[in-house]
View (cartoon, one colour):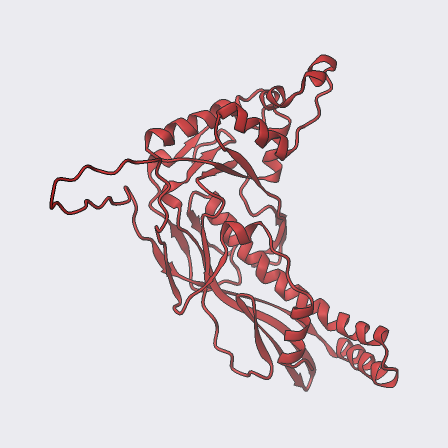
Length: 353
């Protein structure tokens, strides 16, 4: 069936476009199957240097409240099968190409197995997005059970030591058009300013950002003079809202909207499609990037049939009696939220953590 060269060629010709997750938690290869947080960036507000007496040593400031968090990686995978009828069609496409070697027949053959290669890559990328966004939007406290991890091994729960002041809840849910969203944002900024920290990004899923767009207070401050005169206010775009907030708060503060939709299969076969970033949650961060998706390469048993693609391995398995073929992907990794102690986790559905 497919060789490693076939698989590699298809992925090279069909590169995966970068998405939001690649800026929030970019990939990082590790030589270990363990991971740990790093605090190599300070998100404190400008803090002046200390005066020194002659011959004194330079004082070293620690990162207040920071603890290193470490853990193991999750193993997960996906596969797509071909039975005897699928294999028969595959052989006919190869025979047709051999008989008439033109571009159309070549493309038909490539598309036939390419659909499976696209499927397993999409499945692995979707699981990466789910793990990243689910962990971040749960205030870095998430459990893995049969309902949300039927095919993962090696991990049961993850909880970061997030401080109590970093988690709060609004008094009026943002789905209420009368909610004072700008006031809630100001409260978050004021709180972190008092802690000597800064917030510049607000991560939220697309469903709840639509409530922000339809909010009365948001629309009022986004409205132009003409719109106010003729009362023709349409829900503003994310660009318009971010521009307005820069003026309103006198500093750079922007919404970053998570629009992904992922279908996951539970242990009993039930499929659920949803945004991996939780409903009713806004996560305030100092920058777009909050961490890394750390992965560890799996050992390739047969270089003729397996090859690396991104953070996972893709391979082809076949047996002749009965006729059966499977294209599969498998990987090992986990998201690491390095900025957990600098984030603010706000429940915007008025339901406490």
